[in-house]
Length: 435
Ligand SMILES: [Zn+2]
Ligand SMILES: [Zn+2]
Image 1 (cartoon, rainbow, N blue to C red):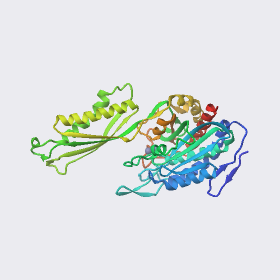
Image 2 (image 1 turned 135 degrees about the vertical axis):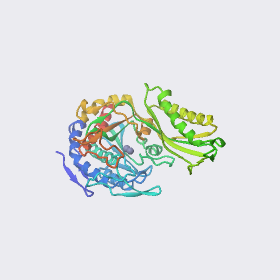
Image 3 (image 1 turned 180 degrees about the horizontal axis):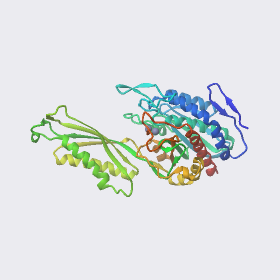
Image 4 (image 1 turned 180 degrees about the vertical axis):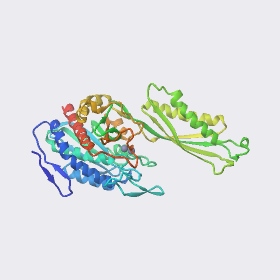
């Protein structure tokens, strides 16, 4: 029998039991820990923290992991927390990752545990909300840590729990989040052999898993184009060089990259201009226009191709008008495409189907043009990232408030599937790769 043990912080610990293979016991352990996971998620939801400010979240996580008896390291890449669980049998090292940061969004869900937190953001005061569901990721991974600790004796290897700060970005810092954790050695000592991560997603029903080998999320590169002309009276444009018409031509020209230049049968791609700023007055053509935007691709080669084509298109259109265009593409600050290791994804397909409750509850065609810095882990070790549906029964996932919306909702019932998925993937990976 498993016993519940209440400890001072109010966390719940499943007593260590041994006997059946861990794979069979994990599902019932996940069911038992689910009410606690829901409570942790509600607490985290009410106390969101912006990227690189996850101090209280990190302390909450670290306390839980220490009470489980794990080796805990804090202060990794800012507020990152890493814990190692060493199984009772020899084997490889598998990592599970959750991101911890919230967004500058003012919550409008009306939930009893809705956030009322505000924070300084740039020169403004903003509401702070777990509008991307990272609170669910943290609670799920806390639950998976608890479940796997309960079957520790039977695990064939080690599990590294990675609680990551600053997934949503901290530009213009030189590095943050996953990238910074890797630079600080999170994948070493013990060396990680494979990694799994999940994202809660509004566009699927609660508990349904979206999963596919290959690219699941896009690369994301910040784009800035500065067009320089020569200022003149707007009534006499021939006396100068108009950067506004050039900016308009560049905006349209960039759209021919996806539609005319890149093979659309191979992979989708997007370039969008989000801001255009230039001029101070209606009857003056300004010297300069600044545009910013984003480039999204699913393939490293296409990404590199885009960088060259965007630069060429902007520079040559400007040149044709006698202007110049200076193109900055922040590949150093951007995220690579999130590409699931094909072999590992195929190998784990049966596990995903089992935890989702059958192959019919797994969506294989899911892809997002959003981006994730989980991609940096995947560049270093084989990794699989999957989506967990969180739109409650009775609501249409197609019209549910999406991630980053002030009305984004996570169905509590999906959390148990998340715990089961993370714990089962880790245990199965270790079992299948044990010496
Ligand atoms: Zn997000
Ligand atoms: Zn997210």
